[in-house]
Image (tube, rainbow, N blue to C red; front, side, top):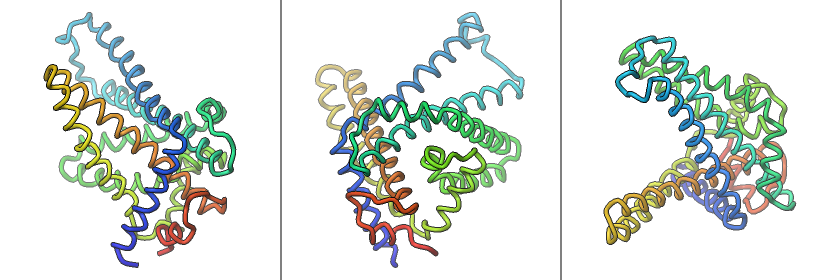
Length: 275
């Protein structure tokens, strides 16, 4: 199958993901809650760190690499935990929709809480990997940047199915990573057309939304234009994040044999065909 055929299939699957989000608009709350939680948590850490320096930025000068890497690890851990927690909630809501059951934000959050141990374990595992890659990048020079860049791409592909695996297969972090990799080997093939489609839509959507909002806001004040443009970009990012998670859920349930509404079976099989 040609690249352009794969691109067309990925585009169509993405459109179906948008359709599900349109029919369940409350799902947009999960990436929004994820972003707000990250801001609040990191803001709290930042405030505490700044306070410990006597509210003087000149005192924030730590040359201890162990402390620096500990802070990097903490950042990665918080990031992975928050993102996976809310994506797990969204994945479950998508599953409810696929099964024809009522979709609710409260039910998604309740399910995510029931998987709290698995989410924490994955966050620790992923944060450890991220911190190790960061250490390699900073200590091996150009070669380290190239290596970590390649590993980062492989990591993002290999962990494509991690969230639904954590949600439904009662797997530890290493098992979840292996299972996600196995699913990718079975079905992903050579195509990344869906990711390309989502990225392309997001790029143009941000431009289309941000520029008009900036112009409208600037009629009042330049700062108002900047604020409106940033809010517009964040809204687009939230929509795209929710759409991608819906896509992941749909394909996961398809490849594991569960029926999926609003998706063409042959289309997904072509998109994720065996090599």
